[in-house]
Structure formats: structure tokens, C-alpha cells
Length: 397
Ligand code: LMR
Image (cartoon, rainbow, N blue to C red; front, side):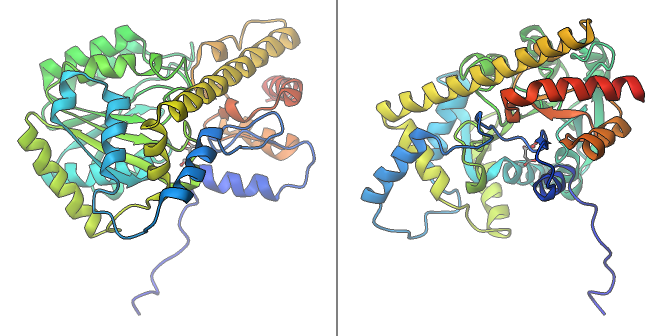
């Protein structure tokens, strides 16, 4: 019979860990798994700007009638302004609202497959746990370029550039706009310049995944590298998320941006994205996009939001620095100083999957097998415990 052939799927490493951590009764448990921001009480608060926008929408909104296949076009425009700014490529940019950035990644992967069935997508090694599954589900071939240097725990710039030498017209190179997931090791501005040169010379398509704008060094600072590239390459595509910097996680608010060689080409690709959306989910959920649109189009709300992002960013950077200091003091070494050079929510610690398992099972510290910790989820009172157990596990295994 038709449904008799399926066994259990492999569980998603990030979401299944979130479930396991919730089910753990240990009062000392520490959730360093899924990428969410938490305050000192361990709570992921509704942002003030979102609350204010929600109140305004409650007053103003008088219909829930369908929008269109592209979702909220006003949101699409204002998000393109936020990401691309007033640069020249903005004139050829089109966007489609999507259910989160994962939705954008899939829609864009589908359109790549449609246009170029043999295309290869190059991912950083390591990359976001959902990148390869999405690209493969769309039928694309996946290759990896060297990225995270296990010795320095920073970007292996020369390895990356060597590996990308072979990427040509039929290749897509996926880059993290900022706050690299999972490693926390970001491209320097010089790295962005080098990749831009390569894209111009070799003709590959840059595919930017940007989900953490504002969590590295600030909203504007974090996209300098991306904007440098955006103004110089012929074409690029972007998957962007409002989950983290608007705290809209469950509202699934994202967008797919396409910048073709010409406006006409961008429009044709947009029509294909809409065709794919229509045969998948028709149109994205509206609420999150309506809130973001309200915030970014109301100067007072935008300022409240910018201040909140600045605050969250500063808090994550303080926690990051305190973790480094605790590790320095307890180990008497500088072996973990690299964590201070990482940016955004995450850091990969360079521990083995077995060590990660010991941390979970014996010390209730939930981190991914890749050694990724969500720094943005740490409470100050947990720092000593985390540092202590990291050193214990490092010594005994
Ligand atoms: C993460 O990497 O933890 C987040 O982006 C959540 C997700 O959707 O995987």
C-alpha cells in the first residue's frame, strides 16, 4: 500500500534538542541549543516595538482579506531598503515575503533548480544545519568550501578562496551575511572583497543568508561586507529573516530577494518564485510582516526597535566576554579567547560530538554535536557552571 514504505525520519538536530532540553527536569540545565535570544531570567521577551506595533495594528486593521502571492509588498520594499540600502542594485531588486528565512532558502533553491538543473551549491564547512537538507530537497548538488579553521577557530580565508577557485557560471556560493551560523566566525571586510572579486571574475551566483543582522556589531556595521558585494556583482540572491532581530520567531517572517542582471530578469524570476509559492503554500502568513512594516515605516517605532536591537547586541557581547574571562581564570590559559572574536549568537567550541554528548548527559548543558553554543541564550549566573564543565570535559576525554 502507498503509505507502507516509510520509516522514521532522522530528527532535526536543532529542534529535537530543544524538545529534549524542555523535557529535562534537572534544575541546573542550561539550554545552549536553538538560536534564540534570552534575557537574564531565561525568557525570550516580546520586543517593546513589536508590542507597540501590535497595539497600533489592533486599532487600525479592519480586514484579514488575502494579500497576494508575494505577501505584504510594503514589507518587501522596506526590508529591501533595510538590507540593500540606497545602493545601485536596489533598482533591480525584487522580493517575495516568505514563511521565515527557511522558506526563502527553499523558494530560492527551487528557482535555481528550475533555471539550472545541474547547479551546484557551495556551503561553508561548517554551515547552518538546515542548509544542506534544503538544497538537497530542492534537488541541487551540494559542495563544501573550507571555512572554519579547527586550529584557530576562525575563518580559513585562504582555504576558502582556494576551494572557490573552481566555482563558475553554474555554481552558487552560499555566504552568511553576518554572525555565521554555527561557528560565529565571520568573514572580514577583506574576505568580502576577495569573494566579490571572485564572483565578478568567475561568474558564480552569490547567495546570502542573513538571519542575525544587528547581533554582531550593530545593524549597519553587520551588513557592510554584504553591501560591498551587492554593489559590485551582476546578480545575487538573499534569504533574510526577521525571527531574531524582531523577536518574531514563531510568526515565520522572512523574505527572498532577487537581484538579476536587469530589472526585467528580476521580474521574470519573481514571477517564478510566485509560481512556486502558489504550488506550495500560496501566500505567507501576514502578521509578522505587518508588524515589521509598521515599525520600519514609523520613525518613533523604528527608533525604539533600533535601541532594543542595540541593547540585545551589547548584552550578547558582554556575556561572550564574561564567558571568555571565566574560561581564562579557571583554566589559566588563553585557549578559549577565540570565543571573544566570534560574532552574533553562536560560537563553535571545537569539541568533539562525544564531548558534546557528555556535556548534555552528565551536566545537562545542551549544545549541538557540532560544538555550537548559543551564547545569546546564556544567563550570567550560568557562566561559571558552563566554563567549569567545559574544562572538565576537555580534560577527561
Ligand atoms: C538555529 O540555527 O538555531 C535557528 O536558526 C533555528 C532554526 O530554525 O534552525
